[in-house]
Image 1 (tube, rainbow, N blue to C red):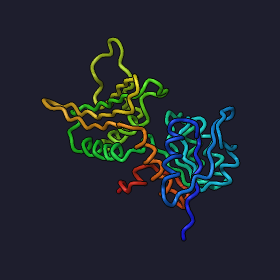
Image 2 (image 1 turned 30 degrees about the vertical axis):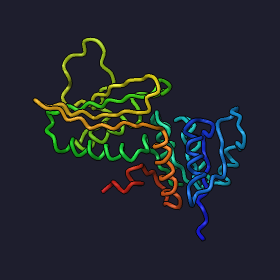
Image 3 (image 1 turned 180 degrees about the horizontal axis):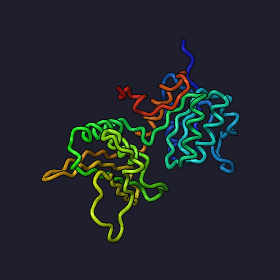
Length: 255
């Protein structure tokens, strides 16, 4: 009989951490071996991060950008695979995760939803197919407690469209408009953000051209779908070669 994949949960006392833990416990071929959270957080059954690393084959991490970057370095030193669902990374943190991925396999995604990852592919296809005169806008809405904006998913969608058009999203992105901003710059990709209530996550990519508008959209109805995707990613990444992967790799959507 094949040994189960040993899973540890970072941010175990958070809502996503608890949801992931319940799915792992119910999944065949997986074993929940440790749960941990940031220093100072109390909870039944929590262990120190070093102990969790010593027990696990894969860690699933929905915490914060800073905590995930720090955990990636520790996981790399132990050769433990990592699934990262945190967002809001700065360049230094992204570089730290990339360095860790040189030693251990890491799946990092701004969104673990199957539907959203298919939306990325459709957005890229539309961006390639439609003339440059079609302006691109990315809309996203999330709950009032989300701390980063635009969302990691919105940036992924904008990045997919930009890459399909041969653009650098860092240069093409227009993240805010306020006041008299003048006419739209050709080629820019705009981002609009809503924060309120308990919105799980809505994303749309709008292609606005002469006399017609194409809107591609996805609505998340429950956070459980993100946890399910993370568990799929954890099962996939176990035993993979070192490297940084995303959900497109997990789902076989690349190439």
